[in-house]
Amino acid sequence: MKFTILGSGTSVPHPQRSSSGYWLETSDGSLLLDCGASAIHRMAQENLDWVNLDAIWISHFHLDHIGGLPAFLFGTKYAPETQERAKPLKIFGAKNLRRLIEAFGNAGEYNLLKQPFPVEIIEVEPLEKFEIFGGLEAVAAETPHTDESLAIHLKAENDKTLVYTADTGFTKTLGTLARAVDLLVMECSFVKNKPIETHLELAEAMYLVRYAAPKQVVLTHLYPEWDAVDFQKEVRRFSPPCAIIEARDGLRLEI
Ligand SMILES: [Zn+2]
Ligand SMILES: [Zn+2]
Image (cartoon, rainbow, N blue to C red; front, side, top):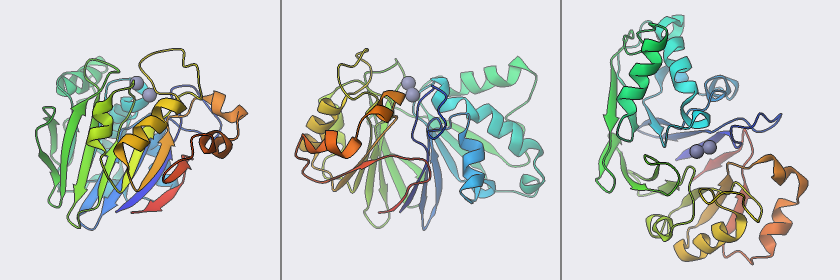
């Protein structure tokens, strides 16, 4: 699996951290995990094959995670590069995803689901296995962030595994979901004294790392307050049991 960070930031405009977007590629296909507004141009900047993107996962409906989706669909509708595309694009997410995409479309009569190629919207049930594409299995779990928010566990044909928590408050469910995964991509919005319950701060993230015992961890969705601290120094205080990587836009990992 090849993993590329498009956006390591949040909804707060930041010069180095775009809003959420993560590109995952296996030998069987490609998946975009969340689609913040900047993600669609970041895919092109990173020379990723957005024209043939197989699937998109929307973790929840906050605009730093879905705001780029209507713009992407508006783009693929008219881009010269996608006019000959025949294979379907699958968009996965929680209940009411279709209603929201249709509402975006209706807002400006954009007809976003009428594309040169078929678009499938799949609303998944928590804890029920589903297939993203042949060779990439998934299961989602509810997280304490919004009513619909979901973390996702992915397993490729070669048994490599990844969990993407997306935005979440603290829950041991994440530790269970991410047990022994090859890569845990976990939000860590705040350094400490988090101002809201529905995100994680470093101590909670490190607790979950110990609980899950993944092979390596990327901490992401970093609010600008992280700019003021030394990431690795903060992490070392917790004597991490595995590699803890600070997300940055453009970072690529081979899993
Ligand atoms: Zn967010
Ligand atoms: Zn959110």
